[in-house]
Each structure stands twice: as structure tokens, then as C-alpha cells.
Amino acid sequence: MASCPFPAKIAGLSLLTLPLAVAAETNQDPELMDPIVVTATLGPKTVGESLSSVTVIEQEDIRRQQPKEFREVIASQPGVSVVGNGSYGKQTSVFLRGNASDASILLVDGIRIRSATVGGPAWQYLPPQLVNRVEIVRGSRSSLYGADAVGGVIQAFTTPTGQGTRGWVEAGGGNLDSQQYGAGASAVEGGSRINVAANYFRTDGAPVVEGGEDKGYDNSSGVASASHEFSNGVRTGFTFLGAKGNTEYEGGEEDFLFQVAGVNLEVPITSNWRSVVQFSDARDELEDFSSFPGEFNTQTRSSRLENWFTAGTHEFVLGAEHLVDRVESTTAYDESSRSNTAVFGQALLNFGPLDTHFSLRNDDNEAYGKETTWGAGVGYELDRNHRVRSSVGTSFKAPSFNDLYFPGFGNPDLEPEEATSYELGLEGRYVRWFWDVAVFHTDVEDLSLPSQDSAGSVPEARLRGVEFSGGWQARGWTLKAAATVGNYENKEDDEQLIRRAENTLRVDLDKELGEWVLGTSVRAESFRYDAIFNPSTFQVDRKRIAGFGVWDLRASRNLAPGWLATLTVDNVLDREYSTAKRFDNTNFISAGRTVFLSVRYDFVR
Image (cartoon, rainbow, N blue to C red; front, side, top):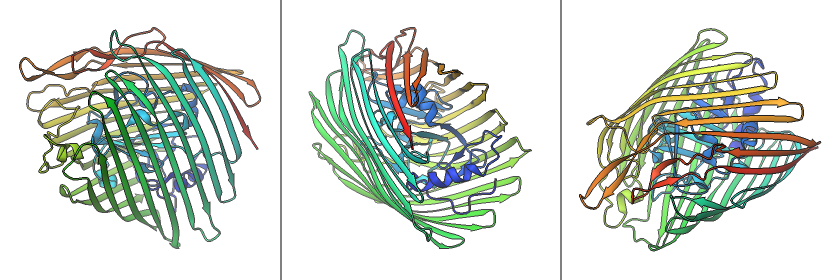
């Protein structure tokens, strides 16, 4: 495919890029299963052209699954292992290719959100009911996104792409006294787009430890976005997502706020040059009610400029970014703010069947100094259906405010962790099916920052493995499969890094039968270790957690024009499994079998 002449800015806001991505997709050969993605290279490219390992989860996939938590959408996808301290809004960690949970980036409509105090995002509070698409990009991306993009980038999109005026209303309920209510509307007319939606989910929950009491969770969320393209080609838009609520855990409860907001402007300077500017604000706020109560509120404000240039089939990006983190807390941090200024560039070169990508970025942070990262990739189209790719890149994980300034154990002299990643991949895309195989290797130096994801100091870690993904769609059948075989170890003693499942498998199968759609999912993950402090020896002990398999069922039926009823039964066999341990060596456990029935009405004008 010829590259889109003026790729819009995905890292800024999807309000601009999704219309371009959809337009680009309509020019593709419809026979090949090669979707458009925008996270891997900042602008619309097919998965093959991105020269990256990318998993795309479409709106239809999300609706069929009816997830209550975002982790259900991404769990056991290629290279992904998820850890939770119980079900429904409990602390969640996401490991991409064995990297720490705070070494991967979460974007919501192009806006990065994380807790500046702990370093990672609050994955558990992102409402999947308002997400229309997910892109999982695996591998080093610091040369495009800066700090923490070591394992990769996961981006959730809330902006619908359907034409015309649309609306929906949904209500549902299930065991554990779970309830969900939602509604939304969107309109696309000419160059204008608008979207608003709201959702409420609550549950009494289930015990998070063996013999414990039910721990509830509620989440009230909403999204709003709008954009307009003027006759002279100028585009402007804004986006917002907010979620707030309460979650109970063993020993207390906490109120939370998870929020992103941004505005952007895209201006065509000449026929071969466009500029995109974006301003955003992300907030992660938490008030803890336990024996050690406190507030931890972080705010990240950023401004970003990208200049896109085209020369035939070649594209170039020159940009700059300024970011400020602020912390307000009942804990007296030695510093309460820090700024980061970055400049970056990217070259996407096309020579017929040969594509090459180069990227370079320099970050200057007032807390830990300068870091320069780079990336390079090459791909060759063997024929219409097959492509081989390889890439190499450097990345770094920045120390958080807790690492640097938390009273009693923060160290302001800590340096970022650095990594070098390599990948070799081969893919095939056909009329009704596709497959992709990737071999990856990452060397991490100075993996020693205080973290729940590492047991003590790990001067050097080696993360390597093989990923497979495939899919097939025909005669009403839809099949997707993913598997990862990894080896994530401390290079000094060859011990497996804690909290990571090295081997994962996921299979999703659905069949359309007239007015019915029947489906099933199977997920399996191998054993892992967690680290528990032993007060009698003042040592950290490694405790093994057994692997598990989960079987889910689902069915949906069209009741009348626009009306759809969906029934899901998760963990059909009522397996009790765990992915993490509590400090007292008890397991955090799953919720067991859950049943949920929902009814949805959609209309289109």
C-alpha cells in the first residue's frame, strides 16, 4: 500500500488519526487481512508496513466478550501476562514480553496516563465498556514515546468510526450482584464528528483471598469527543475519558479517579508538510482508607508538536514534547514535580517491497538527566502475502517519584534502567486468514529500581521468547489464537523473574448461526513466582504459584431489529486460581464462575 500522504498524529489524539486510518483502509486490497494500525509508527500503516508485532482487538471482539475489566481484553494475548490481586478493580500489573508492569505504556486516545508515584498505569480502572478498539504494540518504543516504553505500548481508543448518527443503550446484571448500565450517541456529518457515552458498573465482588469476605467495586465512567475539519484542511478536536469510583481490598478500600483530556490542532502548511500540536492532561488520583490512610494524586500535563513531511513514498517526522509531572500527597515527598523535554525524529522509507524505519529521541529530565534512544527496522515483502521483518532498538525505564523521593527509602541518585531489544518476525496474510511468528530478545541493565515486579536487585536481566498469533474467518466462523513461549531470567543466577508467566495460550472461537452467535475462549498460563518477605530471616523468599487454565462461554441473539441479548459464563469450571501472593504468603484468588446477561439496543440513522 502507498503510505497515507499526510499521516495524522496518533500519539496526540485519535480524533484526527482514526478518520485518516479508516480512509486509508478503504484503499487497501479488501482480500487481505492486514488492518490499519496507528500506534507503532505514530500514523496509519498496515500491520505489515508497521514492521512491528501488533495485536488488534476490534470493537466486535470486545462486545462479544462483554468484559467487566480491561485486563480481560488483553489477558494472554501474544507476549502479554496479567497479574491481579483479586478480581474486579483490584491492583493489576501487565507484563509485555517479561518487562515490568511500569516498563510499558498505556495510552487512551493518544494520551499517556500513569501514576507518577508508582510509575505504572492503573490498568484496573480503565472501563472496557467504553473502549472501541485496542492496539498492542510489543517491543521497544522509547525512541518514539520516551521513558518506560521498554516492553511496548497498549493503546485504547474510545472514538467510534461508524458513519451517520448512532446511539445505544445497554443494561445487564449477573451473580455477585453485578450490574451495568450504559448509553451513548455519536454523529458523523461532513467533516464533523461528535461522541458522548457513559457507563456504570458495580458489583459486590468476591473474596480476594481464601476465606476472606466479598470485596466490592464500582466504576462510573464517561467519554466525550468532537472534531471538525475545515474546508482548508485544518482539523481541530478534543477528547475526554473519566472514571471514578471505589474498590475494596483485604485490609481497606480506596476511592479513585482515572482521567485523560486533550485538545489538538492539525494544520497543512504545504502539500508535503503538516504540523500537529496537542495539549493534554492526565490524572491518577487515589485516596486510601486503611490502617495507613493517605492521598496520592498525580497529574501529567504535556504539549507535543509533530511535523510530518512527505517525499514520494517516504515520510519523515520531526517533533518535540514537554511534559510535567506533579504530585500532591499526604506523604511528604522531597520533590513534588519534575519536567521532561524531548526532541525526536522518525524516517519511514519505502523502496517498493523494501521498507526501512529509523527513529531517534533525546529526553532531558530534571530529575535523572538525559537519555538518548534509537530504533531501526527493516521489512521485505517476499510476495503479495508474505513479509519478513527485523528490528533493533534501545529503551529506558525512568525511576518513579517513589523510587526517587519517598521518605525513608527513596534515592534521588537513581539512574534509569536501560535495555536493548531485538526482534525477527515472519508473517502471512491471505484472503480469510493470517499468521505471525516473532522471535524476541531483550537485555536489561541495572534492573534494580525498587519494584513489586523484582525481588531485590537484578543487575542484568535477559528476556527472550517466541510469539505466535493467527486468525481465520469464513462461513460464519471466527477463530483467533495466540501463544507465547518465553524465558525471563536474572542473568546472574538464571532464576525466573517474579510475577511473570513465561508460557501463555489463548484461543477465541465464535460461530454465527442465524440470529445467534455462539462463542468460547480458552486461556492458559504457566506457573510463576512471587516474592514474600520472611520476617524471621529478614530475607525475601521466592514462592511458586501454580499455572492455570480458564474456559469461558458466550452466546448472543438478535431479539428484534437493533436489539441484542448477550449471555456470558466466565470460568465455566469454577476454577480457583491465582496470579499473585499477599505479604502473608496467602494467594490472591480469582472470582470463580461468573454469569452475566445484558440487553443492548443500537440505532443508526
